[in-house]
Amino acid sequence: MELYLNATSPYARLARIVLLEKGLSDAVTLKWCDPWADDAELLNANPAGRIPALVTEEGTTLSESVLIAVYLDSVSPNKPMLPAASLGDVLHLAGSGQNLMDAAFTTVIARKHYGKGIDDSELGQRRSRAIQRLLKQLNSELGEKQLASTINLGDIAIAVALDYLVFRLPEVKWQEKYPQLKEWHAGVTAQESFHQTAFC
Ligand SMILES: N[C@@H](CCC(=O)N[C@@H](CS)C(=O)NCC(=O)O)C(=O)O
Image (cartoon, rainbow, N blue to C red; front, side, top):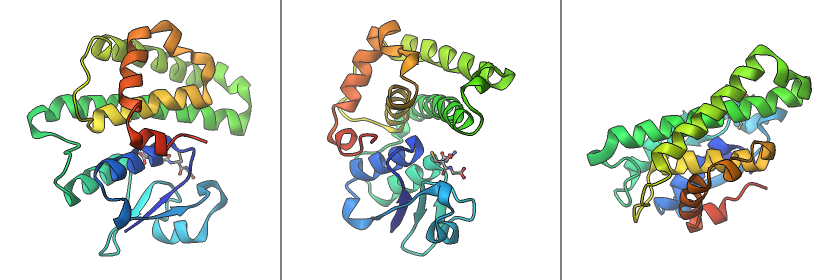
């Protein structure tokens, strides 16, 4: 299999962490690319030009990080990313993590293309409020939760989104406002898979 990715995409990092957690590193070649530079190989694999994109053994391209995660989860039975017994909860958290990533990533891209003043636009303000509401919700849902011995897709999506905020929008300072969420995040990101995929 081949995984198209870069080192700064939260979506690509989610897919890569799942890959590592599932013990599939040797089965997947990492194809480093710049999705913003119309990389020819990426466009051939995924006409949308977006990462992550996974090309399976059969030559089928999968896009969308969560769909890639679902596929990788099915390839190996070890460490289920979507445990059946808590599927609703895990998908709820995975969705919240994706929503947080979307609001943060769109803020970053809007600033890159239109300048920081775009934050004051109606859509910029909506994104900012969404980030604040999601952080509040995640803190109340996870702040007092004991971390399970194995991590799942929900944990990964949220921890990656929180890391992305620190990486690209440090002014949000969620760790200062939510020390319990900070503790939860530290537990998840202590995993080797997070160290190996740190944003850079
Ligand atoms: N919903 C998608 C988002 C993927 C995405 O937006 N990837 C960005 C990089 S972080 C990208 O490739 N952007 C290039 C473009 O939009 O042209 C997912 O979960 O995989």
